[in-house]
Image (cartoon, rainbow, N blue to C red):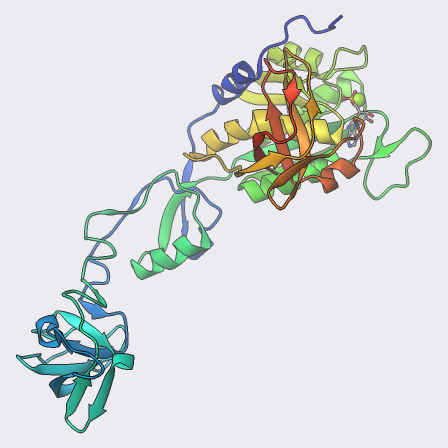
Length: 402
Ligand code: AMP
Ligand code: MG
């Protein structure tokens, strides 16, 4: 018998979480600090890029028609009219009928030319150049607006910027960008049995693993984690820490104490200070999860087992973070794989099974709840829909990489 009054399905829980997302706050930051941040105002090309027609190879700028029919045995013979210097306009140089101009990679295409022959396909003898391969119109040339035309979108709003984007921003002359502010996420670990990482656990005690795990992931996600330490299972202690953390944070994550045990304080304290929107999700692991709101801010009670806490964090909290960051594409990556073994599952709940990836095979990582080693042994999660009694070996699955 469930001790949970009303267990909601995963999509409903996700919608409840995402529904609490405040609009992203924005800030302007230096472009070279932008990777990992989410763009909140699209970047438009202020000019054509590259801005001039240029060669993409070292070779000779020619008129394509002058090379028609040329070959190793019957090369075209062109007169070289000069050399393009890097970083300068090809002033005074032009390619006339039967002529050519030496051009390095990235050099400005001289007037009259409409293609470039690679140097490997030519031979210079004095003023004359033998062309041993024909080129077609436009070959080996990048036009002035081939990369970006002035006024077009270079980077769309909602994109999580990559180091590659920083290069493109620089090429476009952008030194700053407008991104979403990093949400501050308060982390509170609860349980009389918890001790800090620096302590040696006595009998019945365990070190706090969740705070470090959640904080590390949040940093990677582009949020600012804020630690509030370990709170014993006492109403007053919960009240005190929540009151302290709420004004300083955008979201609170509590782990442990989320079930309906007498000791489990989270739901009572959240209900007292605000509202409990969800208590119990049809998800495994992670059923005893709380989604609440205090003073308009999302508060989550995650289950205590580290693996369960992480699964719920990924499935329920991350979509909220995506929204708060203004991110249009989920941060989580997925990959397809073939299941290496049967995974049994119970109908009526969505199950997230840990798997290890081996050459395109997703190998289930079996182990009891509460084990830490499955976190290390697994590369991601396979979702088993709630209407399904398991997945068969050999089936195609999507793996959520974590
Ligand atoms: P609870 O959800 O509070 O009933 O806790 C379930 C299990 O998770 C218990 O064995 C706890 O000791 C363990 N646990 C709770 N919080 C943490 C934490 N922060 N780090 C490691 N284990 C925890
Ligand atoms: Mg507990």
